[in-house]
Length: 160
Image 1 (cartoon, rainbow, N blue to C red):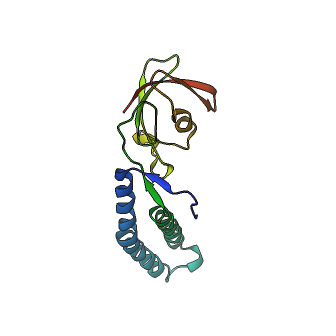
Image 2 (cartoon, rainbow, N blue to C red):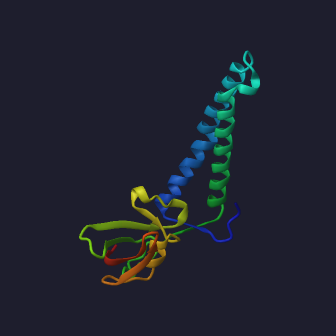
Image 3 (cartoon, rainbow, N blue to C red):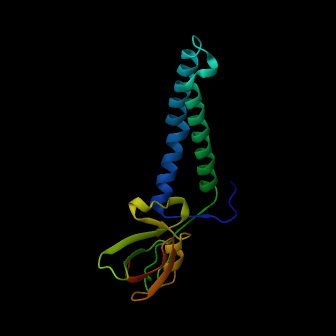
């Protein structure tokens, strides 16, 4: 996957991706080589075609190498998100507190580039429907998101 546009990364996101790349290209490859070696040796006595562990190890190798290529692509073409003090409108890199209309519970998200998005950790991509809707919004503004259940409205409560 060759990127035309640079991946937007926070400094924290860049450090995490660099650490993951280093781990996968060293420890990850070594562990997988051992796994492949053992699976191959174990399959020598059995019907080689039915060696499920060898097939699983090869699939894991394909996944590992694919992720390494993806990380190389990102790390060779990225742009750091600069943390500015202007929080008058939502920008990539900002923390945004929102509340869905009709509900009281506030939600807080870090708006990041797609390469480091992780909704479970509260990091949403600027390319996601919610991320796109929030970009450029000010405190007090209502943004509309086309969600699977229909149009959902959120109010921007705070921008940090």
